[in-house]
Structure formats: C-alpha cells, structure tokens
Amino acid sequence: LQAVQMWFQSIIAAKDFIYFMYSLMFVTSHLCLKFALIPVLCRSLEHVAKFLRRNFSRSTLYRKYLEELCVWVEANVTTLSILSSHAEVGLGFLLVISLFSWQRSVIQTFMYWQLLKLMYHAPATAGYHQSVWSKMGRSVYPAIHQYAPFLNTPISILQRWWSR
Image 1 (cartoon, one colour):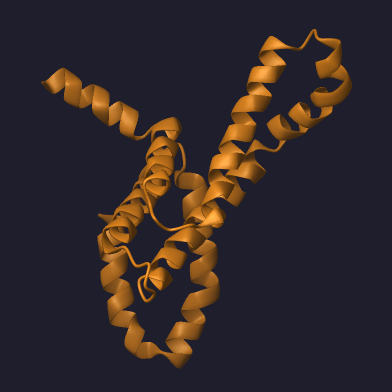
Image 2: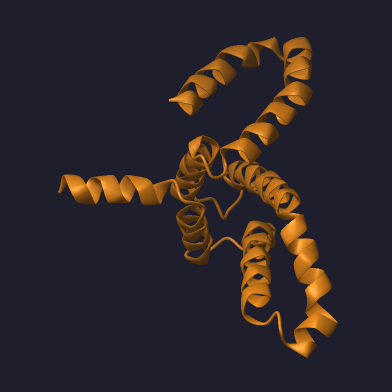
C-alpha cells in the first residue's frame, strides 16, 4: 500500500496528469466554456510537434509544410505554458462568476480551484502559475488596499488556504 501511495504521489505532480484532470473536469461539465480549450490545445500542440519531429523528420511533406511550425512550437514552449497558465487562472474566475448564473456548479468550481492550487504547487507548472498570480497581485492589490480595504481580511484568509 505504501508503494502505491508513493507511486501515486509522483504521478499527481506530473504535467500530463494535471492536464488529464483538467480535461476530465470540463468534459464531464454541463458548462460550455470554449475558453477552457486554450490550455488543452496548447499542450496538444506541444505533443504533436514533438511527435512529428521525432517520427517524420525525414519525410519530404513534413519538411516542406510542417517543419517550420514544429520548430516554432518547440522554441516557444514557455510562451505556450504562460498562455495556458493565464487561461487556467482566468477560467477559475469565470467559474466563480458562473456561480451567479443559472448554470452554476459549486462542486465543479471548488474542484477546479483545488486543481489550480495543485498547479500552483506542482513543480511542473508552479513557475508559470506563480508568475501569473504574482503579476495579478501586483496589479490588483494596490487598488484593493486603496478602494476596498474591507477585502484585506478575506484575501488574507484565502492566501493562507492557498499556501497550505
């Protein structure tokens, strides 16, 4: 049982498992958020480019039509990951806003925020998510402190929950 637990802990932090959970969450959802496709498409594009370069590098069709695109994708993996992180965080806020509509799903929103928390702490995605959250904090916190200081306590409670 301990060996299975150690194996599962190593898988949870893997990027592919996180995106599997992400995809599963939105495939089973009744919400139609096309915005949720951005991270999946970025990750898929990355995998397809690697596959094509590895398996079809000698093909003339590949070299003529796809090689330049695949080289660009592999050179811009960091940019695609940053785009994905921005979309994932934005989607979290869209789910919170959707709680006020007739399509609300409290359980899905809670599960997604748990997944965002995992993405923030998992080594494979932590750098990108921490960058997004710190950028958002630098732009939002001054306005909150100036115009809505009553939100300081709820925000500090959420930050403590987030860092656990």
